[in-house]
Amino acid sequence: MAQKQEVLLEIKNLKQHFGKGDGIVKAVDGISFDIYRGETLGLVGESGCGKSTTGRTIIRLYNATDGQVIFDGEDVHGKKSKAELKKFNRKMQMIFQDPYASLNPRMTVADIIAEGIDIHGLASSKSERMKRVYELLETVGLNREHANRYPHEFSGGQRQRIGIARALAVDPEFIIADEPISALDVSIQAQVVNLMQKLQEDKGLTYLFIAHDLSMVKYISDRIGVMYFGKLVELTTSEQLYKNPLHPYTKSLLSAIPLPDPDYERNRIREVYDLEEHKKLMNGEEPEFREVSPGHWVSCTKAEFEEYKKQVKN
Image (tube, rainbow, N blue to C red; front, top):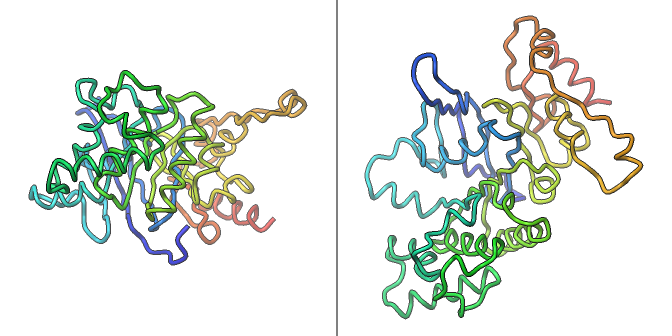
């Protein structure tokens, strides 16, 4: 993680609601966090918790219902002109979950990768454009012979590398990786994550890494945020989250991680988070996101806050 804790992205009370009247779905319901320049922030939670919607709202694939997304000092959702949006789109890119659906099957790999180069006018000639495409292919572990092929000719891991090359084509500062390895074989997942880490070191990138696999998120992330039903319930360093989880939902997620140890697996006790039971313990008090120890935030009531502080000391 970057030595200077310089904030690149600020999320303030972000909300993303869908539907109308009684049919409103609060996919993201008032979350706040920062991402520091040069770090990887992991965002985890079960399917449907709102983590992918958070990523898509940050990058303006959805217009926020409420709240602010401030990138490098500028309000993303306050931008109006095409020129401002174009400038923003160059700084922030996305790697999508499904490497099969996210690449246009009618376009060659060269045209897929060069799409951003063309839009932003980053190449002055066809030869310069192709030179850049070749460089990007080599950067992600492919070769120039792949440029004239079509997506269906590649494996899932290779397609995701093409997706990464496309994101890198405009030299972004920040990349949202929306479950980039969940559709890949386990043997390929580590290769893609290792590639992303190398690119981060080489290019000084900042990542929001969205996933439901906590073990892989721990491997790549500096800090981890845990989402549950549209809300952030815990946020701290990767090491601290595993060593000292505080919110009962975080504990339930960690208890579900399998280990390659038959004796451990035979005796593993899975913790199940029961929201209704938790609400009874809250006695009608609305939880707030509080800093239990430096950098360790938890959604909790005042009574829980005092209890969590004792747990941290222990």
